[in-house]
Length: 585
Image (cartoon, rainbow, N blue to C red):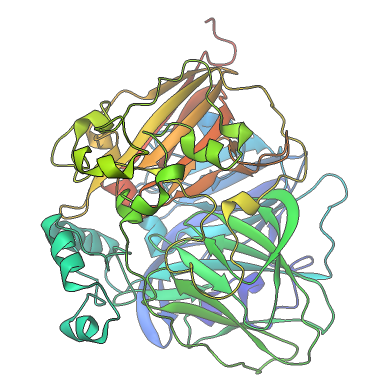
């Protein structure tokens, strides 16, 4: 595959700032087509951009206007979504929502002003082409001085690839739950005391739940790539000892959340989703599908370091090398023990009664001193779950802890697409993510993020909208509020410039990276006034609640889980903001 890689991703790259293979300027041409690829010595197929996987790095300048001519040489429609970019909704690139798509043999020209800087990416929003290689990075240089000082930079695109066609993968997911999970609990694990006890297994079995089902598609059929290279191909980036390296991480994976670390180096996170944050130094971070993080590392030793992107379910990893000279390698750590889901992931954590979130209300956030997450006008009063003695442990036997109690989420349309409703969802933005609770070093959490620049809109929200993330893992059905997009539910409606708090409640036992097109939202957690972190994508943990504030821009905007197969199965909706510019109310 190395011969197919763009120059910015070639091994031993000296950096990106002056890479002659970058596409830059204000008039750019892209061609989408089929191509063969070789990954770790095995031949496969890809949908590529300009004959490359990942596609060419596009480098833009804040304050300019760009025209991008996209020619489709496939025998089916294609599209490009400019992920995280603030564009007019007609240029957002979502077929059936913001434009018709790009037919086979045709060219479509996108044109929009560049209103921001930072690390972003672009990818197909048609069929399952993103899984086949239709993705690439974007770097936007700021109009003024960059607040992040660095000597050299490398873009690091994480992704997953299967030699099985994505439509076949989807078919298998629909036919058999856990078909790719080769890490199920065993009798040996029970006897060794490594997994759940017999009573725990029986309880989970009654709920038709598998605690080892952390990822739908696993390393059993995935190869995890870094800049298009498999672990054996070992993508390598150079440094000079003592340099400040800026690593621009992009998770372009279709279905994989990664845990990233570089053993022997501290990671100073300086940007999240392209937005500058106050620097925070950690040993590891979890990056959801479609998120980006900019990280500074300063290797002082004259030796190589292994960059690890371990799949959240520990079924495999991507591997690359940072080195002072070509050909150097470092020890590759073994995969760590795979995580198991817990009662908290069911939304039933009895140990956190004092901090639980009452039906997506504000108890959990307020218990953490989070004034940003206090109740807002227009918000419904918290619904009491089964009993009004939630704080009385002696009264637990009187509570309705059913995971299908519709009273816990009356807006949900109950049906085969709703397997569970979390009885006690809670704010988990201060947690590390599944499997990282006891790694013995510091892991980035969302509550570490503080915006470097002041928020543009500091108004209090005028209302709160609760959206439930629903699914049936046994039947691989996913949706919002119990409906999949093919059911044609009414869009979530907002008014132009309206300030709204959205509360995402995850009723499923899987993490969902949720993405809102065309906007940055502010995570409503404890942060200095006016410096809530701005994101375009956020992981909602199983049984968890995430709140964000946003101000609607006119248009029709896709809102979906960025797990490609979850979106394809129905976890997709539209945020419609009216009136449109130039239109009457």
